[in-house]
Image 1: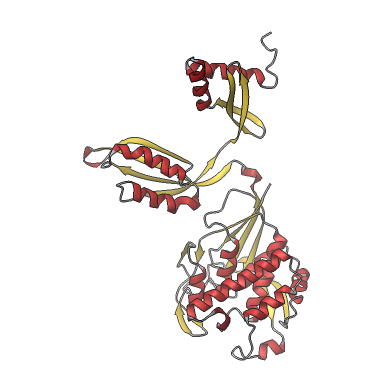
Image 2: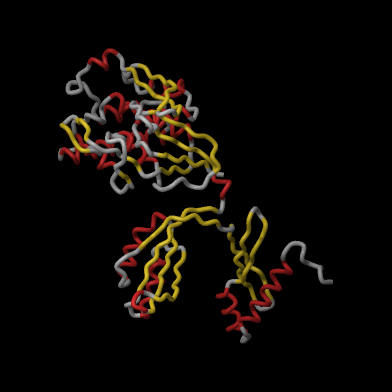
Length: 405
């Protein structure tokens, strides 16, 4: 039974919203203080409080900088990447947590370096070196270790709109660093017209989530709401983290179905096309005869695949066929647990594909290739081998022996 965590970013994400959601889920504040204190960085004090965001109760994580940290001018006092890495190395995070935190800061620094076209060791870490970013990132790593989710996914991110003030001027949302960190991730511009995803929020969500889609099948166990600073009228400015177990739908999985119709391709190409689609990761491929516009007979190509393989399979359809458009939709499918068992028959061993649910066998079928091989070797019809194999299966099933005696 695996634990799943789902980041619902309908109002974007920021570092303090991630921490707020984790605290809302039960992350001990004292444990967080201890983890941050082990950095030996003067950051002040942290606190958590209950707030309302458009009527939704949420936890607001707050950092109250110390007088020394608050008075320091950012252009004169900031933490360079090497200082942050050294502090993480001395912290109480686990070895895996230290490696994760260092990788996150390295990625953030690389984004800043690329934007300003300077070597990473010379980058001026306005966002990376700020105290609140350090606290948010290290705190989130500690919190995610506490959560111990085996699978983490997220929704597409609402980045907001309008403009945002950065260290180098005014930029359209998403800010340059945020946009770079969101590369290859599904995002959209939504309401309200303000920055909803910060660089730190983008870093944490994309650093942990292994996929971006709708809520996966799960049995919900707990929900945490992390509040942002602003309170929008009619729109809860919160990050929702849903935690659950996948045991409620062990056979359920999310798939994508791709389709296209073809009426102008050499039929000889359909065979190799199926082989290449399956080699590229398609779970299933099938063709159906259809009547298309202008009364032309055509072929409907349907491909069932994992969501992460959609782009590669779409590219293959465009490259290997004459289609000029591929449509797709996300679906859920429920399937039985499957295994292979070998059954001894009078003609030789035959593998069976056995399907079950909750430990109860519901279907069993002999592998056709095994039946065809034995039929060729023994010079008997394939249908006879299949019948003999099914009898052997029924005779070997628990409770079947001796019934007919």
